[in-house]
Length: 209
Image (cartoon, rainbow, N blue to C red; front, side, top):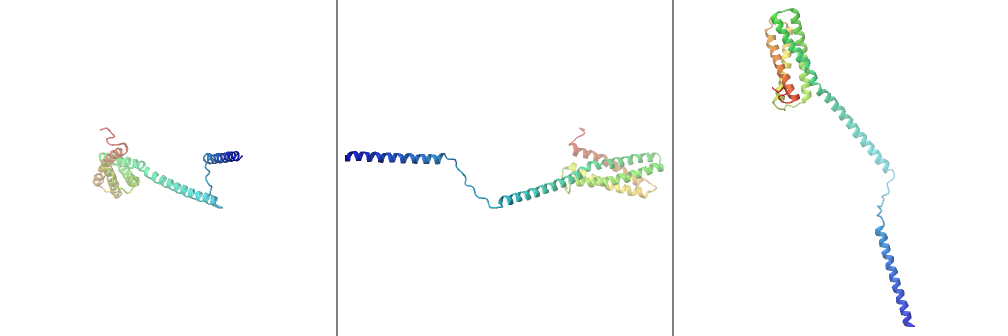
């Protein structure tokens, strides 16, 4: 009898141990297979509203800065692009003044002299404007290659000589020697200036000479 009781007790202990072992494996398996859940940090009251407000202010500040930068670049870019547009009138007027002065040398008339004077006035003023926009185009910068340096300072020389020619024409001297000694070199400098401008705009040896 005692042997039978011991046998049942041993079987009961074995079954209990087996059940406990099986339950433990099931629990670990459930923990292993259960998807991980990230603990959520409770938001402070009003935190989302404050964050959204800060983001909106930051976006408005950035947008305002971008708008100001675009406007600034647009104005400066427009001023820089005006240099090529301002060079044509002084070139045409001063070259035509020199050409008309050749006709004055052949036959001097008041009408031709007046035409030369008017074209010199307009060409000199235009040369000053073109030189000014040339500096706006490059900025306060004294670098560049040889062609750039020659183009910059030759333009300044043309503007200066144009003002001298305008002053001589305004005085209206009887002798036109001083005017011609100023006007004809201006015409030669303008031809060289136009060539150098083409070199800067279209590349070296743009005429394939």
